[in-house]
Length: 103
Image 1 (cartoon, one colour):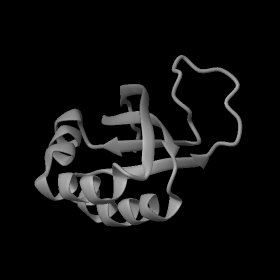
Image 2 (spheres, rainbow, N blue to C red):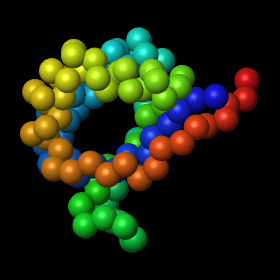
Image 3 (cartoon, helix red, strand yellow):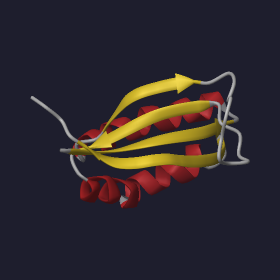
């Protein structure tokens, strides 16, 4: 089984957001993480938040503990502070769930 989050963002600086993504992906791989789907959204038809959403993606880890360890990693937090915080106006966790995987 895997643990996955469906996330919506309001990206306001595409260049720095892409730099953030480039830098975190190798680190995520060390924790068994990856981006499975990634969409740029032009129109939101229904939402349970007032925050804007123009990017939607899924991030998946081998389990919830590895996901939590990744997001608490000091290297991740430095990258987040430098590139994510100024490039994303809001983050919406749409859902998080255990995903049954078949091999």
